[in-house]
Length: 501
Ligand SMILES: *[C@@H]1O[C@H](CO)[C@@H](O)[C@H](O)[C@H]1NC(C)=O
Ligand SMILES: *[C@@H]1O[C@H](CO)[C@@H](O)[C@H](O)[C@H]1NC(C)=O
Ligand SMILES: *[C@@H]1O[C@H](CO)[C@@H](O)[C@H](O)[C@H]1NC(C)=O
Ligand SMILES: *[C@@H]1O[C@H](CO)[C@@H](O)[C@H](O)[C@H]1NC(C)=O
Image (spheres, rainbow, N blue to C red):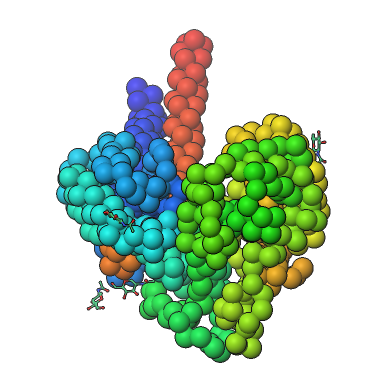
């Protein structure tokens, strides 16, 4: 009789818990692919390859608050767009597979509102130096291809070295929430943290960017950025021809210049007994970066055999020759006569820095936190055989042969170039990703192209983080178990009473 009235609270709790759990599951689906998400596509057309990044953010924009996260990425097969110079249709076609993926990754209803942009970097800056007409043709071809998709094409162009550095810095600090942070009181706050410097090592150029309060001796290196109502004064410098591939090319050119143009030359940075054949034109001198090393007369078709000697000391001595540490007309310089204030604070080193560091760790079992660590690691690596390097890093010969040279390069670049010392070196973090997104300039570029930082309603976004969601789900499950337990208990007591009767 009163068995029913006694079970009512437990039944109600059970129903509520079930409804709660169903709502949470529905909410989770919504958190993943909310119909209110907006998307943006950036193609990072680097010198060695093109990558596509798709970002997303909540649709409702509010002033200066927002969270953009990376939705997906795609790596274009083959070389960078500049490698299709003189090859009509090649650059446009190379992007097709990734663009098809974007068509699938982004809900159809959003296609027409999705901004699409392409930024080309140092590979195209070099092509522009060699043949401006051809670089324009390649860009036009790529643009025509991108416009054939239903997205909202915004722009394509060659980023300046300055912009590339600044966007990388914005990306790093955006992802680490150094500009704004969601506070418990339901507002976006300035976290009051120092920003982090950005060290980017690409295929054809390298960038260093950090906030500084030192006097600017060369205004062209300084940028004033206004983000979330806050002003940041940053120093940025891009060194064309000091990216990984162009540095290695200059090293070869320097070795040929010093040893003379002959059928066989020694390479102190290649593993002992490793050798390969190169063409003087295509592999060495066909680049504006090696122009100053070019012999007055040479046959671009000539084959030269390059033989490794695995000699750490000679390698590092030759690597240093690629830099010019003299002729500074300011109170202090990094290299090539470029003004640079003292490095300060923490730094994030990404792209080729990250990979070189990763190879060093897998080859020597030691992480690099001081300049001395790299010196010791390079000394070990430069003595290794090509097969040992290939096995331990799981890399093809194409990459494995350069690890000794690259270890010495980043050591010289960071210490003698940028003047990181024992102390400041330990504040460099080598990373590929931060906050689930790839670290590079692409996100910073998109934030700018889409006109400021997209935002969502104050206090709504992030109200339910995945952690919070899990906690509430756990609570509801406990309620459910508790009510089932109560029901079971009530039923059992009722039954035993019944049995007694
Ligand atoms: C957004 O900013 C504009 C001007 O900067 C201001 O007029 C507007 O009221 C702001 N909106 C909100 C919701 O804060
Ligand atoms: C530059 O490229 C154009 C094609 O866009 C070609 O006709 C021209 O010969 C090239 N110039 C040089 C100097 O290679
Ligand atoms: C690194 O560790 C592996 C196994 O853990 C070992 O075989 C190898 O000799 C070590 N290498 C160095 C350079 O210490
Ligand atoms: C972002 O875009 C604006 C124009 O919309 C430009 O003035 C500004 O310099 C850009 N920021 C960076 C870091 O390049």
